[in-house]
Image 1 (cartoon, helix red, strand yellow):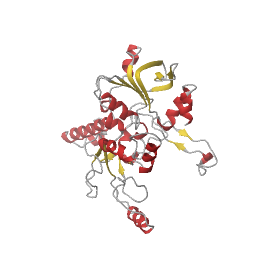
Image 2 (cartoon, one colour):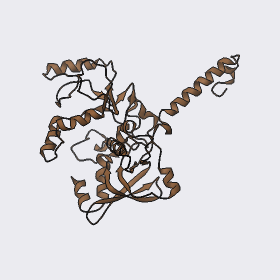
Image 3 (cartoon, one colour):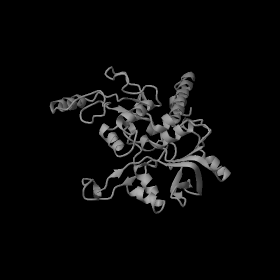
Image 4 (cartoon, one colour):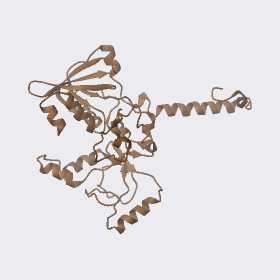
Length: 335
């Protein structure tokens, strides 16, 4: 028996050994399927290697498949007459990303860019060399696959400030409908009011299950100091205590790659291990193509007829802009 020692197997008449081996085979198969290839959209990189190039141009090219990139690519793909290319520097997420309790397991791994801050005399001064590790996800789902999954819309003030600075529609009340459209609240707690959250969107959110005794202590302390307590800060306030929602359900992480990337969309091509080097601008300073290295080997340049969406993260996006040359790119990177 594959999983049993000879001494152990000899103590059975046969059926028990067969049943145990079948059970173990099933468990291992299910374990491997937690983040198996069949769970994710097809990797167009295999086709790219065999064909040697793209059928250009794409309508849209999206750089990065993280918290925003996966959403943008998936939503664009709903327009079936558009062709979308999604470029991701990493590969499929590892098994550990599926579990809520293992949210730190991928730090310092091949699925982490493993950035470290430079000492500046003001931050990370308790750390060795006054430098902090800055985890950034390198996989489908991006940092959404390795963070603590806290779901927070942000504060009313920030959104209203953006709108007042000349961005119509970006006020808190304006974006609220889009949050609700994306949400699938699974919590059964009675203190959520109908309409606070969406219930039929692609992104599942739920309360964390915890019996930590410090929750009651912290809540009592906050109330004693005069701060409020609420089931959720849906109205946009930001001072008080609440039991947070997370992009998770039943102990499983829900990333934007889970929720927004369709597995069978023929107009969406996803290339893993595509490390973008720079954008290429025309004489009007408009980005018209992307140059990337595939699997650490061959370099490709691919064009977009409509738009290039740069969603490579808080570090990756400005880095790509800086590498893309002078003028507008570097100006935006400095901002």
